[in-house]
Length: 369
Image 1 (tube, rainbow, N blue to C red):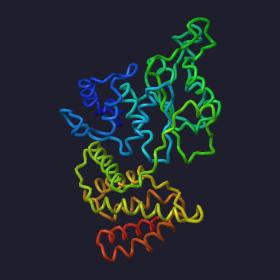
Image 2 (image 1 turned 90 degrees about the vertical axis):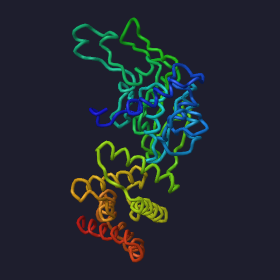
Image 3 (image 1 turned 120 degrees about the vertical axis):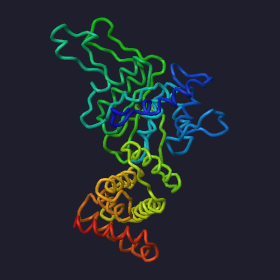
Image 4 (image 1 turned 180 degrees about the horizontal axis):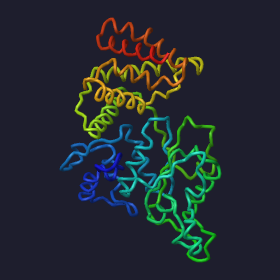
């Protein structure tokens, strides 16, 4: 792990997965490494009533019914589509599920405008084809085809950003559970082994980019992941990710609870302002997601570590917030300036923490103006 910038979930939590596998006595679908109950435990964490000899920490924060429906879908022959706004943890949930089910979350296709049918089926090693002709040895299987051959989980990120041709190719894979290779005369069909499934993610804000056809929608079970609005749950997510950051960078820096409260409240305020806005010019371009909150806090922590006195302060947090959220000039700067004067300034008269936040925000806006 020390040689990986970011270890996949099956590597990062290998010890937990080994433990759960060793005590798992429940029936397992297909070739799953863990039973559905243990998959849920791995993702949502254990409770005393589970009777385990060690605690399994929670890794994804959200309604347990979303996780349970996702697991049930993977145990069927349908694909799983996690859909929601940016920063709701869709990709992280997909990675955790794949790691728990088959100990491999890296068979991933990233959907973009440039994604082609080859990316979800196969391509060819040109030099081998020239030297020996087309054969299974000269074929380069896609991550999805590899998942089919191994009977494991393949992932498709940002499905709605890929073109209709790619989506149509996915329909046949989900329906027929095999891929034909017409270039070969023999051994020209790859059949999916039991346990093969696809977890796809889609950004609800991408509607209208490349909408899914009705045929493809029928092949997926939809699990909609809502934006986290509960402040306590959001605080747990931010704290969990922050602790991971500190461990990865080997930083010993405290995040005062008062500053975490200020960060959470500021995002709540800005979301409320965006909801009441009457035009796009009155809304920040940022989605104001939990993931962006984590990014703001990460930026502030690293700035304090490398260029400050290794103490996280409200002014640094405000500077990171303005720097991260002000993507349009002058529109976003005007919105943030209005927020500082209309909301933060009255609070600053009663709370020193908000006073430092106000000063840091003003300085950051002045530097960008």
